[in-house]
Image (cartoon, rainbow, N blue to C red; front, side, top):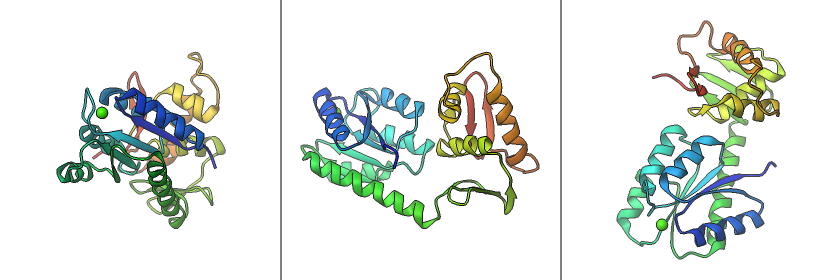
Length: 230
Ligand code: CA
């Protein structure tokens, strides 16, 4: 299984670095952010499997960041950390969309156990639905490699499939051409090539053309976003 990526947003550097070290030792890839705004920017810049989020943060408090994260991604697990053992905080965390809640000081192994159980639950959900990525009426089955929109089977080339998979894994998030180049083509972005725009257009013709709701949107000057326009 590929390495899981965890974003840790924690302003106390000592705690943040200790968490990173411990999680690295357990096979997780970790990115740190030291305040709420940085946390949001890092979250938007790449794909993560899980977020560990301190409540008391400068810049943007943890609940607020959790709510923002939920606007972009309703499924990513969020574990909140707090120094206070207070029922209000707990309720607010869950209202903001957190999955788990941990009171400081905690033992590292306790956090690790939570992370493992949350990721395991997510894996089981994926297995239960046959490893399907979904947005609106479009479904991609990663096992059978089938793509269906509104009941209609869509035939994609291998590259188009990879591009759509990347969009689906980052749904509701703007991805730049450089992100796509690196993750789908495994190359550094060369500004002289329009291969990405060409492929996005191929994909549009197959998954959007003839359907009422468009899913692939151009974000001028930034890249593309896969989302269901409400
Ligand atoms: Ca803090």
